[in-house]
Amino acid sequence: MSENPPPEEPRSRPGETERAGGEPPAGAGYAPRDPEHPAAPQEEAAAPGPGSGHEAAAEAEPAYRLSPLTLLTSPLNYLRSYLVPVVVALIAGTYSFNPWMLGGAAVAIAAMVLSGLVTWYTFRYQVGAERLEIRRGLINRSHRSIPLERIRGVDISSNPLHRMLGLAVVKIEAAAGGGGSEEGKLDAVTAEEAERLRRVLLRRRAHLRGEESAPAPAAAAPVPGGAAGPDESDTEVYFAMPASWYGYAVFSLGYLLTPFVALATLFGLISQGLGEAAGDRVGDTAYDLYRLAAEMAFSLLVAVAAVLVLVLLVAMPLFAVVSYALTHWRFTLLRRGDALVAERGLLTRQSVTLEKRRIRGHELLDNPLERTRSAVRLRAIVTGLGETATRAVLMPIGPRRRVEEVADRALTAFRGTLVRHPRAALGRRLLRAVAPFAVAAAAAAFLAPLWVAVLLALPALLGVPLGVDRYRSLGHGDDGRQVSVRSGSLRRVQAVVVRDAIIGWTWRQTLFQRRAGLADLELSVGAGSGGYSAIDASFTESVAFARGVTPEMVRPFLESGEPTETAESTESGGLRSRPGGDDARTGGESG
Image 1: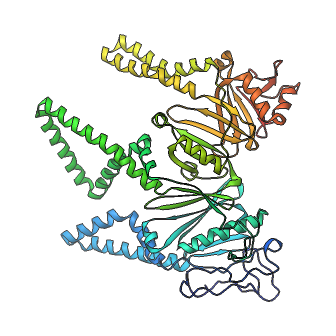
Image 2: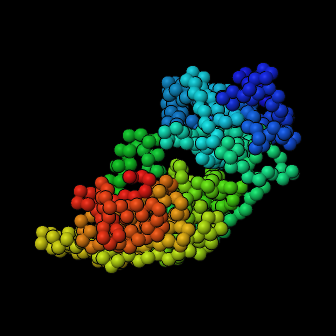
Image 3: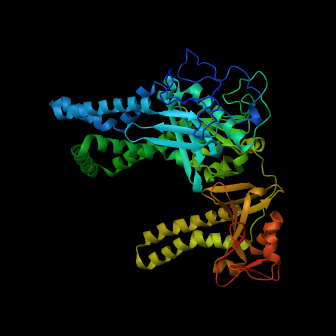
């Protein structure tokens, strides 16, 4: 940002009202900027006047530049993407004194520096009364206008370079027209300006939506525009991760596979940076090692293989803990006003804000290894959130009891019991887990060597406990306020959704499910993945369950004497799929 006002800074004539683009009217009083920190706009020094708060719209701020340190961070961001080819060109050009390669590398570096200058000089952002305006570009100019009332979240992140320079990246997620999403990104502003922007944007959005909290205490400094909003001092820490939790990384399959990902990345960088000649050399070396191994004694080969397996077994948990610590270092979950804020990360520190009003429930996730230690993860079910798998994380892997305690404080824990599904569901789970391998093993016994049949029989035997575990994981329930469904084994998910979030029900039946009296009942929710299913539940019980949760939604389909296009009422009071269709739906999503 610049200490001097930008050329396009708005000016208003006396009596001119505020324009739609967010330009402030005459007399918009702002305190002068702090001379020691010219890059960050300051908040008002005096309390808002009579025309502020709930009774008048917030005034527009002036337009500001990014931090001058963008001149350093922007070229480095480009260099990070082209680091390998630039370094190779410099080394090759210096070794053989190739002026073309040296000149090309110099031009590339100069272009990166120039891009940083252009980015800083042309980038402007302005928080208006109703919109956030972002302008950038010298030749190809772009102007992004984001309505403040459509803002879904304001996230702040800082990579190691930004943290060294006291900078941060502000990412604004907003809903655009037509159901899409429109992102605004400010890379990079000072850390103080990032926090100030988050407060201002969330307060002004709350003002436009009529969701202001109680006025802040007199001691709290108001923000430009005077719109009331959540008090920044109203903060409660729900959870700060202790050091003992980092050990839970060894129970996550994703983190245990980190060594293989690191090796694949390393080989990719080597092949990209060294070129085809180096690839041929690596191939020749591998062939030489193969010939040497073929000449070695069998016992020595077994010893080498045992050592490699031992090293891998040691490296997997070690890499898992390191990767887990880099991602979730000093994980903190807190409430700030009417929003939940999750902060985590060692090298790149992230701060994700989730409005509680957009949270429709939560998910508890685990796998077989985590269940041996009764460990789960907590993730929010949020409307209109991109990158749900990462941004909706409320708790990393930890003891179930502690995670449920935090879920109860931050949201609301499920206090009901899950209904076990019929025994017919067990047969279907066993059939799917065992039958494919059993049939393949039986065919191999006649058409292939015996050892092939044995290898195929092993997964068929392992499918028995897998099928039983999948059956035990099935369940659905209601505690009067929330509905919960659970399924899965290798990745078990228990979804808890508030009743008000359910917008429809969908029953699905295959031919075999109809013969067994089973059905898949899906809760349609306008959040998270969009729907959560109770798999292989009793069809009659599932209809009664849905009727008990949302009677006003299901009753018309049960009492109607006329069949719908895909479902019709039955004498038993349930919904029966017609021969022409496999689905029966209720709710607002289908008539």
